[in-house]
Structure formats: structure tokens, C-alpha cells
Picture 1 (cartoon, rainbow, N blue to C red):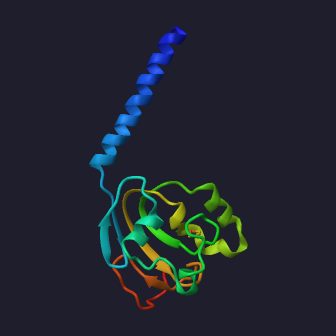
Picture 2: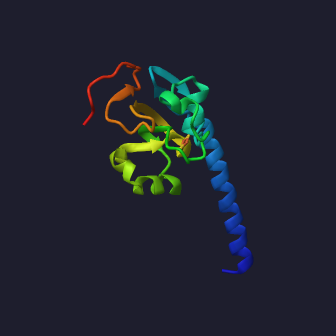
Picture 3: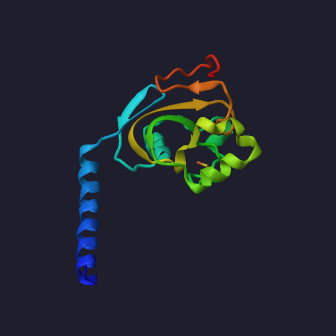
Length: 149
Ligand code: FES
């Protein structure tokens, strides 16, 4: 196959995949359920921004003021997400290596997570949201409830 032909095929494939992504973005409307609210967003939207835009109390206590505003440096946006989301970013990988992060196997940094489909979000206790007690569930329970396994 000539170089010219390869370039043509690559260009066609590249444009088709972009078009497919645009079409899928229009067809798939993810639903995010958190703190008793359900709202829609676009595929690829940042979970942290989606939650805050819909008045979900993402941060615990003083973390409402003392947080990094979504650059992945503070860990205060930690949540459990059930559903289709992006893979862990390199920042999250580093966070998981830190001694404080041992209970975080099922936790994600909302600011480093993109929504790819329907998701349910749970917030745990602690400044960094790494406790075992639940602050709120996707259904919206806000009082401290039984610890999760
Ligand atoms: S807001 Fe600081 S790590 Fe997400």
C-alpha cells in the first residue's frame, strides 16, 4: 500500500472516529445520581464539576474552603463511584501509593474522573472522604449510617 493511500485511510479513520464520538455524545446522556438527586450530563464531563454544578455537597467540613479547586492536589473530592467512568489518571495512581490512601481501593478523585455512562456516587466521612462512615449515598441519606464493608 502506498504512503499516500495509508495517509488517506488514516485521515478517513480519524474523521470517522471523531464523528462517531460526536454521534455517541449526542445519543448517550449519562445520568449522575448523588445525594438524592439525579441529573444528566455529557459523556466526558468532569464528575467534580457536574456534582458542584448541581449543588451536591462534595466536600466535607473545612474542605469546602480548603480544597485545590479540582487540580488533583488535595484529595478532598474523594468519592465512591459505581458506574461507567474514565480510568484512573496518573494523579490518582500516585494518590493510591500514599500511606493515607489504603482504604481508597474503591474511591476516586471526582476532579480526575470523567463520566462515561450512568453513575451513582457515595460520599464518605473525613476531610479527604476516606473514612468508612457514609456522609450521603446516591439515594440521599445524609445522617451517618452503618459502615460499609
Ligand atoms: S478537588 Fe482537590 S483533589 Fe479533587
